[in-house]
Image (spheres, chains in turn red, cyan):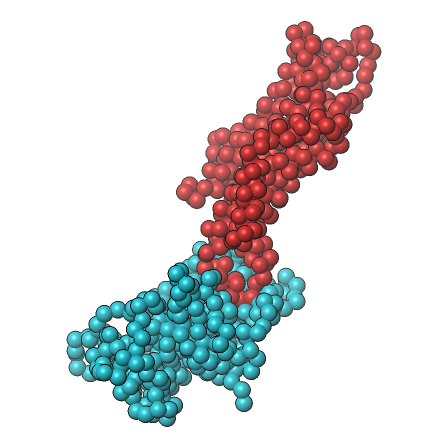
Length: 281
Length: 324
């Protein structure tokens, strides 16, 4: 398994776009992990008269916002939160999608039909619409609930992908062989089907991280996601839109980090997809 | 003493639409004893592989084993087992080796994990114990350097080695019966002989019974104690392998021998059997071989029972000896 992981990493690294994405992503993750320990408290305020809206320079590398807080510290703390939410929600979404896809794919007939028609129906409702609706009603949604919401609206595609693969695999000889040797349904699903659908799951999961980060930033920008004073990238853009003309660093840097993060995640995801495509092997 | 495996009147039915059903396996009977090899021989579509699957109750849907059939393992009625008990039988008491080792192994799992999985499906052992058992199984089926092979993937092995791995998997829980469905068909001729020798050695070492399913009379010769020749879902000849090879009683069996070249004796033209096996939807009501049989006569319009050609030698033909 570790052989395969390192081979996969190498394959991604050997693609120019994959390498760029990997370098950018690893740098961003390292910054988000280390930064908050070295920088001032992202909620700490200085003297509002003299410390507000300082341009980038000494003391504050990316300047300060209208409440005299350090922009760099807020950006990195916000990035860390974005990455955590993106990773957690994507993992959860992929787990749910894979479980439902394997269940539907390995049970032909009524179970399959019921699950897939449900997914069809869910896919017909825009994700953003559901999220806006729930968040409009649920004021000050707690972080775990936000992650759950993002996950539960993001698994449909994965489940269809996994189901299609499972249906194809179900007729493979090695699945029949496992059956003939007394393997239970669960064992066949976990030991034989899951490892064979790992590739599409990995790609869907990676691209899902980018989607979730973008969604979370968008929702927070609309005032529905993460609430102040918790630093978040979308929230920073929202808070600073009034001073955009006079102090552009307060909006440009968080915006840039959102773009960079999502771009690098998607580059890695696309490179993974190419690397895992059997036609490129 | 009860037989290890007794099959009586095994009938598998498939609905074909319009309320009709076909019986690709139609009243097959045989017994299998410990330490012996029984061969099921026949052309493609004669129902021999389906018979093997029926013994494990793995007939593909929508087919099913008819309730009037009897399958007794050590005297116990397999058809009355529930799904949980059947899973114990599959692999645990009856192991199976499949035709194509290229596709019967999971491409993304290491060899050791696949054998270990088969061990753990039937025994409560740790991962480590399962792996060490896998290693000893690999050396038992004649794979050199088993500790290295354990970590390899199927694509790194040759066809013969993969079939050895399949055999190791089938042996993992020490079954009493091994069903080998065309175990050598996908392999080179030289490798075929090695695999057959391996099966023979394992049979005598473990006292297993082997059900060898094949279309190849050359595979049967010298390997099987007894044989059933199948045609169109029925057993048409049943006797010891020696008896069948010395004096084939059924015209179909004689036709099979006539279409195999011999090394000794004068060089002759092969005589193929005219026509081909009819599909189950087009079986005649009388003797099913009659339309292709060079010796057919009036009586062949009614289905012959198994008749006795010699003691312990049965043949489903009106020309054979007398009623059993």
